[in-house]
Length: 582
Image (cartoon, rainbow, N blue to C red):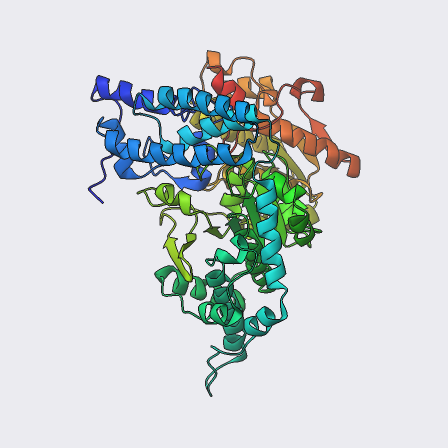
């Protein structure tokens, strides 16, 4: 790969205009499409930007070529492949001759129009054309029959006695005088995983009515995997067996037929104590498995009986972790898209799952262009791709070394430690007050918000006897985002240790500025806790806690005044709606 060129704004007006055109034409600009494109904060759940202003879901070479207006050859070749794939799809599934010709003609017109500027990314072109296809064809699940047949064939194959005999064979186990039981445990799991991974490259198993002879498949399934990422994965699994990890894995599912192998592999991971989140497509994307496929394919429905499906596009961190901590070890979500892996277009639920996972496993060969650019993710990613029959390529992309992660257990430990210290103070007869205040709800005022908070809390401490006042700003650590903060504080808030829960009022803010010897500036005039989405969430919690502990006092604005704030921005410390209105 040639040297990476990082493009910044503000030096060349013509190039800046072309950059802006690239993002708007591809519908990747958050400022222009805030309801569809991930915010910078949500993107940071998946990609570590490290101060880089621009992210693009394609290879570095392609992006540079487009920006430098020399991508004609690269794009034309990719566009032709997309058209061939789409034309083949239309001819296969649209049986009415008139409708087929009409659809191909319309798609051709759109294809010519969209590709003329040579700025549209191939993946974005394909998504637009597929959207037209699914709308005009009026076929609810294109390729459904073939996909179900392929899944049925693999399921039948995995239930065959000759396969089970070969699959459970001891051949390949290495046992000597120094082998421990943990070694044996790891080896048997790794041996089964390797056999399933290699077999999942043999597409004849699901594409043909009769799979290849078992003696040939037995030879294939015992072929070693020589990819560098495989050994890293084995070492990672060794930590799981030894008890050093109790991880979550986000498994980005693959295609029909292959998905049944995926579920068999996931079952082995579950037996090792790993909790798995399976992500599939939101809607139709050729042979890739979609959320609807999982719900309507009878074979997949049987294989996933009892599994917890999350249909919401924007599940909260608390809700996700609650589900992960339940008895079920498999959750199923949609990535929110109908295209190849694109962090800018994924759902909030997927972004949060990515952030909470310890390892990402991708089974999507078409996503390698996006995965293999210079951007690093916030989590280690292992890409598993069948190169050819009997050969699997396993690559690893390490997470960015500067990523700061606050795990569920870390946040819970911080909350529990604070609960313990507060209980010790209560045992001494002190009252506990929790102070909820605006921290980041006014864009550009984070530093001032913290100053107001700290000044006023110190004032309260100077006027109250035998009281412990909890100032959330004093427990913030660098790298925390709103998801982390809200999760940690909810554990503390629901513990029942709070005697007085005070919410910031307009007079509190005015007093803080008085103590600082300043006049209240316009951006703070009339503000109180009701202006904060985080405080609104905390008021909901406070009211719930007061029902359980009626003796807890609530001080601050009335609940009715909080009604205009419903959800804090993903990974933000301020309300998305307010930021967009600026």
